[in-house]
Length: 290
Image (cartoon, rainbow, N blue to C red; front, side, top):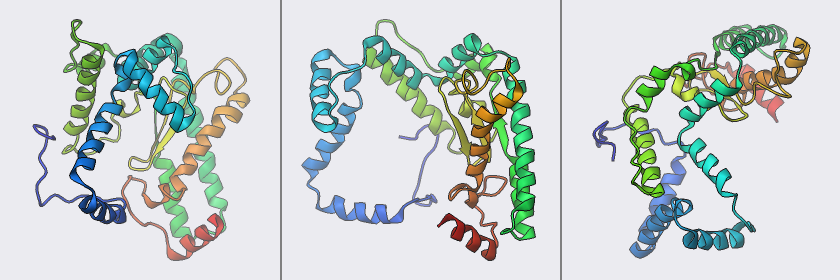
């Protein structure tokens, strides 16, 4: 499945997040009849494509969802189409969104706010009484190293054309066939990254901007703020700055805090899994968490 991008052999080192799941799955698969396994595989394949098929099949799905979740109707066709395109082609949708709805001054203002709040966060760390000095120094360095991403590449046609170069649509193909082509394109792109060094500034990772969201990435020690969240009630470059600091500034501070939550704290300033906490400080941290 990974060919031609990569191959996995018996010597491959695999990171298993939940070892108990793997051992329990081995027990389950050994007592599950082959027919049940085959039916399950087919069910997963079919259920993931039903929304791209005809109304007769989709009505069957709706009856199932009504029993399972109480859902009584589907979204309208225009809304379904928008959701489908946004999910399958987030980079293209992001580019259209930014070009139509985001001022070029937004990034400049947002980056300045992020820098200001990072600096204030470092000042707060100077006053935290439960950190020893070595850990305090590491914590301040980690905050200083957090990168923020609001990708300019979405305005560059050549970047978009290069990214989508291998994606081809056929106007004579069915909706399902075109969806399968997009799925294959997205999977092959993911597989093509497998043997490459981690690129912490890869703009594609941060290109899904036509949503209202902000994220912290512990593996990269970075934050992203979408175009969707940098507007309206949370952010507006034409109003007093204190309103923006109170609204989107709260979100920025929240994302910085994720670098010290129960997941983020296990990564260092470079995004490596390193226990950089002294046992005494970690003990106090866990006591405060409780």
